[in-house]
Image 1 (cartoon, protein in one colour):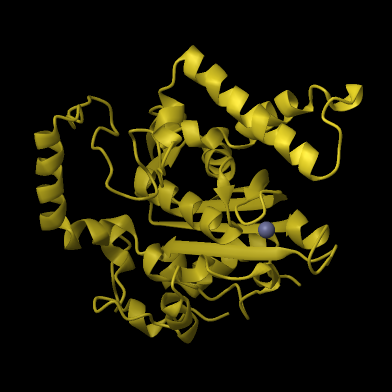
Image 2 (cartoon, rainbow, N blue to C red; image 1 turned 120 degrees about the vertical axis):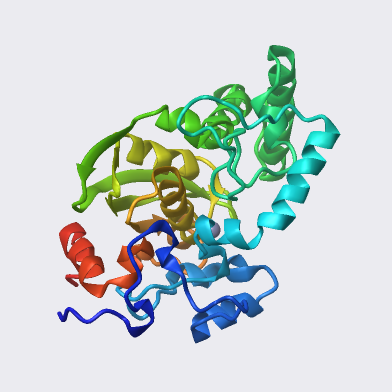
Length: 324
Ligand SMILES: [Zn+2]
């Protein structure tokens, strides 16, 4: 392996704004990214077989427009966002960005929303703030839906063995998706320490259980997270917990990988973050193509991992992904 960086990285300092790419004109930089951008719903608008698709090399960064690190987006959208912030104030929303802890500024990133939800969708905010009565109502509606499912597959919902299945399934489903009710600020909880440490840190083999958003069946696997601090380090247990938060939502593996990387990048402002995930999708294993041993590998590299091949390769060889 050589020491030669990719030409585009130039001599940029490993700052948070160092992830500057030549994408100012919204031009996808690789044919794959162009293809992804051309799809109506971005890279997630793919069919089932795409779970098997892999990039030719995981040691090359694969970026699409949504990968753009928050720092740059913040600059570019400064004016638009200040207008939006004003609009929010005008709406009378209690969103004063004056909280006193180290993560005080409310993030505009789609990856971290300190108000509780990233990618909030219809109904998730209700779920966070619901009362006991509303929670009971939610559970009842879910139980009704599961009873309908049981009837539709030809079961008898009154059969003693499955009498309580609707309740059990509804509660399990709420558990599988509990990440909708969590947020990065509560998880990190101030556990960022100024250590002056600037060497590679890896937490590998983090078990991940998530739900495919296309079929609502599980995909499970392992995630490896590495970062190079910019003096500040994060409590080690926080990395698996951030992964867990994003995994406990309806996901696709590609997005899960990116969300974890971007959340760490934003909350810690390190020199770089690298996340690799290998997992097996039950929607591939139990149905469809029925490829029982297929593993899907996704990666997201930010900052110095993206700029420096040597750093990236050090991470990949330490987590043992590129030895095959
Ligand atoms: Zn699926």
